[in-house]
Amino acid sequence: MKLRALCGPPLCLLLCLLFQSGLSQTVVKSLPGLPGDLPFYLETGYIGVGELDDVQLFYYFVESERSPRDDPLVLWLTGGPGCSALSGLIYEIGPFTFNYEKSSRFRPALKLNDYSWTKMANIIFLDQPVGTGFSYANNWESYNIDDNISVAESYEFLRKWLKLHPQFLSNPLYIAGDSYSGVTVPRVALEVDKGNEVGLEPKMNLEGYVLGNPLTSYDSDLNSRVSFAHLKGLIPNELYESAKTDCNGEYINVNESNADCVDDLKAVNLCVENIRTGNILEPNCVTQSPKSTVSDRWDPTLINRDPSPLLLPTERVSRVWCREYNYLYSYIWASDKAVQDALHIREGTIEKWVRCNKTLSYTSNVLVVIDIHKELIKRGLRALIYSGDHDMVIPYVGTQAWIDTLNLTISEDWHAWFVDGQVAGYATLYSSFPSLFTFVTVKGAGHTAPEYKPKECFALISRWFDYLYI
Ligand SMILES: *[C@@H]1O[C@H](CO)[C@@H](O)[C@H](O)[C@H]1NC(C)=O
Ligand SMILES: *[C@@H]1O[C@H](CO)[C@@H](O)[C@H](O)[C@H]1NC(C)=O
Ligand SMILES: *[C@@H]1O[C@H](CO)[C@@H](O)[C@H](O)[C@H]1NC(C)=O
Ligand SMILES: *[C@@H]1O[C@H](CO)[C@@H](O)[C@H](O)[C@H]1NC(C)=O
Image (cartoon, rainbow, N blue to C red; front, side, top):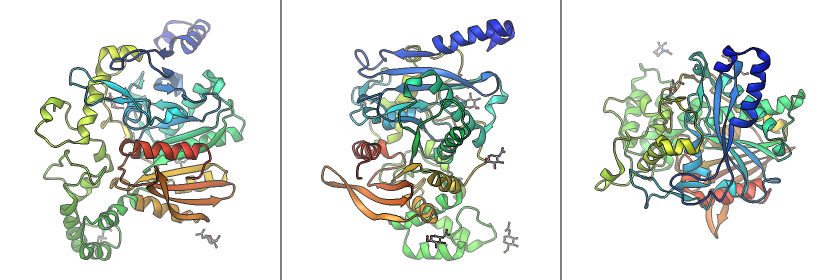
């Protein structure tokens, strides 16, 4: 962007065009940690958005390994806000992941993911919003953002990306993501559809959206944790009934002068304080400070707190296995200069890479998006909402509750769906002419379902993208 200051408009335009078409998009042939050439097409790059393209959003694009010309094109937005695209790619649905057996703290090893969603979809993994992963801005003001700006920037990114990749304009387009992206994905989808409506170029072939354990209605999603804890046997009946009555079903914005409710919630907190919220069956390693309050405990961002990377993997031998330790490898790998060179990261653009940026300058200003879902359904877009049913961060019961308020016609009520002849979860199909809305639980999965049940989630998404019965 310094170019703009140095040269007049015509030269700048030329240079910027060259920059756009030549230097900002590169094909990555191999990656440190994975022997040989990549057996899939990986492109990385930056696209400038916002005023004067001051925000440079970094992305990883992986082509479908099946039929890139026909398969869906997916824009994947990892949640947080502030969790990197790489986190979604490497731990959830991308073509490679860490090979933990062969990794050391000096040399993380990668392996291919047999259940990558890129086996049947073209996926853009986007570091959004600015401040996430490798995305950066050329001035400080641009780091101050909210949901609206985040949505606008992702939408602008997508338009520009498609202009640079017109061969994907006719593929069915889906907007997808999980967790906090429940707030942004539906709104990006709506922007796309509205843009098409008013004739913005390029016209996008939007077919629908996909969400996993999505934040949708802040209060009721968080409130549902108490009924979830009850359903899963973490709190006793009496306490649940008492909390329900004393707190009047409202566990988030509690009036501190309501002593009975406060006492009940303290008791609830005691019952669950050593439970891992992202998957209640797994070991809990990130301990809260003894002083943390009930509302701290319910802080939805707690899930993204990793242990200090100083807790080196080799020192964990005597400890119980914890999923958080898996995350440490991403810090080591993504901070490696050789990796950053392979990914064509622009030097000096970010201070350091973190899996989830906890210090984003971000304001959540849209806390309920149920009306957006209604609007998208009305516009004929199809939706898949899946919930890992052992997640206490955004529990499936809360998701089911807001879906109920959509008042859709059930075309097939709660029924088991199968992988390898085993129940993989339960599905409810809603037909809401002209779209089909699908809600699916993934049995035994945590907050980011494909991270816990890769095979089942791959089967699910394959069937759904191919319009097959779930
Ligand atoms: C954000 O967008 C919503 C929906 O378009 C709008 O109602 C709201 O006023 C916007 N908020 C800000 C702070 O711009
Ligand atoms: C909290 O409850 C007290 C007692 O019922 C009431 O006087 C007060 O207005 C309430 N505060 C809020 C913020 O609702
Ligand atoms: C996190 O985001 C803030 C504000 O957007 C940014 O200043 C900071 O550099 C980011 N931190 C990391 C480690 O990327
Ligand atoms: C829900 O749907 C039924 C049947 O279509 C309709 O009678 C009712 O008014 C709807 N309720 C709401 C809250 O939209």
